[in-house]
Length: 201
Image (cartoon, rainbow, N blue to C red; front, side):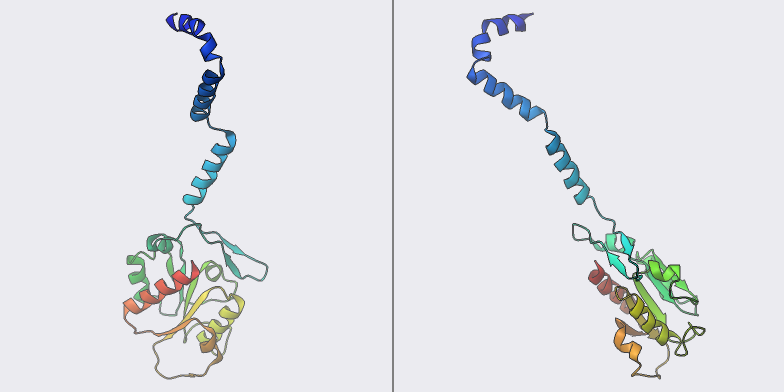
């Protein structure tokens, strides 16, 4: 009960101007306002935001919601979806990219529709010039690559081939984001993926 006696003895000072000011200051220091708590939550939410949502609009064009902070290469690798369309399902580059951390890399032997789920989910599409999309385009992979770029302008489309001859003036070659030889070194594939990913995010 000593503190009660102390309050009674010092009541004029405690309930005077200086005492009230000190008490109010201490209360404000130890008790947060609701709006301060709300601000902290929103700041933390933005700082921790590392995922990216892909929103597909009515035209099927992928819009990308960019994160609040610059993403690290490891964060990008976890988010980017890479699709290879190639009739050679044992193409060695897929496993090499996966081992390098590009976990969401897959290969599809062929597609029957531009609305294929794998295409819609992909950020980067590698299209082999020959042996794919025969039912859709007379120009096979070149026709497919051009159609994909028309329908999904925000996706990165790369054509590649093992053949050294072909139509070097095909319209699709001017539309796509890059071309590559199929026998290019693995680091060239990975380097291209890294550059295109930076442009996406």
